Length: 235
Image (cartoon, rainbow, N blue to C red; front, side, top):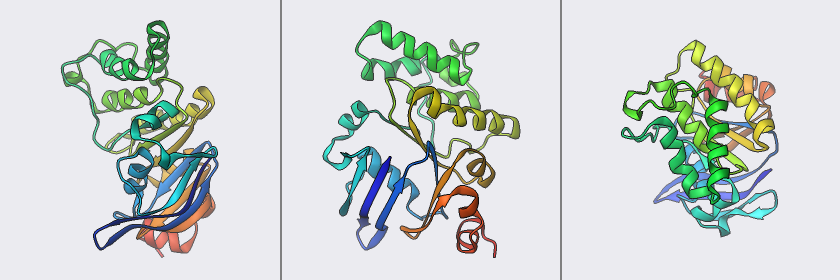
């Protein structure tokens, strides 16, 4: 469970997060809102890249803000970004191994983790493909595989469905639904695809101008008039 208590972030005169208080308890949680709502800022605060002006964050009761970014990784926090961080000169296997080398000390355990993650995302046949030759979907799967290494406790994903075709999005949907039970972790998902959010997220938090606009069961949240105006651009 993630708990935010009066969380605020300021960049000069801009209030990117404004007194956010919320508890996120579902296995897969959606994080949505219009551009500039504060979604990526919130992920950056969770990751330790941005220090909040005020407030608290607890994960399963632990004070997250007291931990450095490295300690958060040790705790089990994982993250994907809007831009894939795939090394062109490494194979897809080696890209995942580069993360395992930092979070799993035992070599045999690291190899087992890599094998499990590669198999889970369906990269067995392309594991020896160099990063520069991988297509968008393969690169996206590498990023997800990295998050599954070393007993993840909380996975943050920033628009994993962006640019994927319908068939790839369907594969992604099934994969996201399976992650919490398979890896015993919670997943927080940012995406602009309302259908994807509705399909995989039991609970959704909506931000608008850094404030909490709505929080609750995803279908009910997406049907709220205020959310439809802010996020979907409809009345």
